[in-house]
Image (cartoon, rainbow, N blue to C red; front, side, top):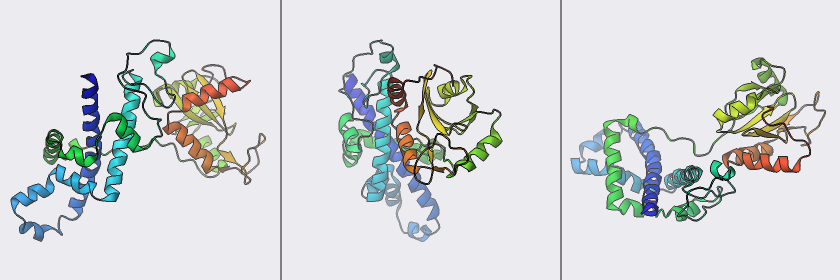
Length: 307
């Protein structure tokens, strides 16, 4: 049935995420140690060579090493979490963590789901593995069907290594801002073509914040409608979701950790804790929630599409 098919694909692609990570490390290690192992390989028969290089064998050895196993679990964790978001966006799964689909926000009923609500987005790997019914890695490698598929991946990668792309970052990241606000002001001003620039913290593009809707349009393509911008002249953050926007606490504070309305002439420095909060908001897809909550509680609302 549909549920069984989806669970099978979840297992298969979670295993693929782990295999991708381990295979690339294995290939790099073999490349570095190729000269050192020439003499040993001469004494190794062909069957032993094939067994040592089989992808299933590589995965089994990796699963037995704590550091490699942790990296494999992290790769599967990232895949399952992202898969739930994609499937939830299409109405196949309910969305957890307070997220909503475009259809549900418009009042359009989504397709009925045969799954319960998934874990919160920040839940650890065991919760996601249990939700999708993904067994332990050792058990998947003992499954003849999955083992055969993995061997097919290994054979194809041996023929054409370019079929194994480098893994994508497991967690989205934002632009690294300079420690000093003065340095940021100098850098951005040299790139800006407007008196009121805004910096996209996702891609580092400098835009106009003079009221023409440039940030809103940029967020639609850069962040699928969500965006985080630093308003240089106001020394504050701007959160955008769709046509709506709100202000957020500045990332730059004085030596006492305080923000000032009259900040000009004061030395300001990046607050790492606030930056971590913004990082988590972006990684947890919580910009939309922050915009709604801020606009609900604020007496001053930014006109839709202004920025």
